[in-house]
Length: 204
Image (cartoon, rainbow, N blue to C red; front, side):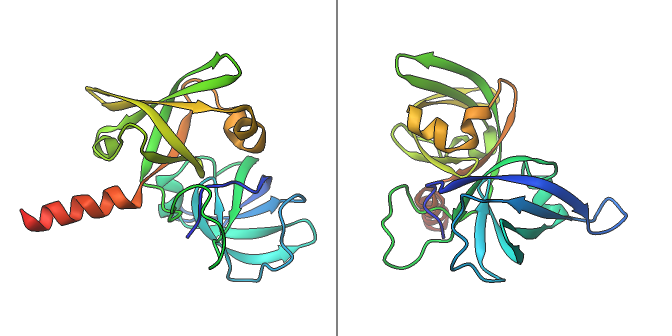
């Protein structure tokens, strides 16, 4: 489990295929000099751009993970060199500053616009139809591993458009600062919404 509070920005600096066919995954080497690895062990979980991955090797300034083809097909930002959000797994006793996050990407959204509004930044994202029903005003959403609050929801023919207000600190501390219009982003819906849907389905 995670909280969606990013502790460092790392850098994928090496992507190595694990096989020779289209079904093969990749091994990522991530440089993370500002990420606390003092208590990290082989087998621990780290969320990378919102996707929970298992550490398979540690080195002086970072670590390595292996990403399956299934995970690559369901996510964005894990198949090439570039900056990534990092968060260690939550420990019992940690403060829950964001919200409960599983580290399981549910789908991809698309950045519609990024607008500066006063001292903040408005981020508008198109959410696909299969996830639109889980989004609500003042509800929670994870974008590229970052726990965020939805400020507005507008349904449309493709699903829904959500609007999020980003403070300067959030931009500076995460890879959201690098987002561009049209770019794909990893989305994870709120766990509570998922369970509510299941309970309603069972009653029906």
